[in-house]
Image (cartoon, helix red, strand yellow):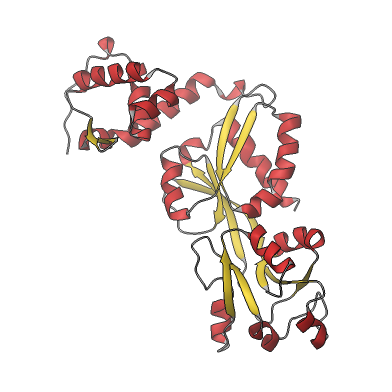
Length: 314
């Protein structure tokens, strides 16, 4: 446990707390300078003043980065919460106006959302909130939960899973899975398999497959269901995005199992036929996840509400 002597706040520059928060977030004086809008020498001078005021080194050099001391690490979460509350108090809930607000939101989401959400969201922002910018990033969920906590992300559009207590969620889409194949697929034509119908199990397992897998795994949605039937499919290719999967299917004899909303959106553009899988696949519930500290932030809440509404229209 760390004990801190009572500080005399009358002689402490509270702006230094923003510098400390940025240093904890970025791990470098250069990165912190960009985050708070100061020069690198000014941040270095601020760090020197913080060390004197808090009577702790706060950071030690570790390669090219600054590693926080135990004291500084223990300040990370409470400091960020104090700054968030302060910003909320000063901004006021009634001051938000989509027309005049300028903000940048970083969203985690696969190309599923690049296809289904971003086009209508772009139109909405251009019309109602021209100062709001959205950055869609795609990376691994186990790394991104931490990014929600350390401000690297503002919200995540991801499958439902077990989240930490500081994460709030809102249900988005429940996705069934469908089989896609290129129009005129020779093996399907020979069997007389009609688009929209159920693909025969032996045909499904006898053809090669391409799989969506961000980690490059050769098993995914549907393989457990096949295993229960003592069947397996032959996955010969994996891609980290649904768009790539569908493009490969459109130009080859491979099959793929993809979310229904995505399949129906891209099938007419890519010349794909859609079939029901010959086994039950559990639907995947996707959610919008964010840190609880942002739950009452007006701009964040406005964007969450519109993301929900846009996806309900899919």
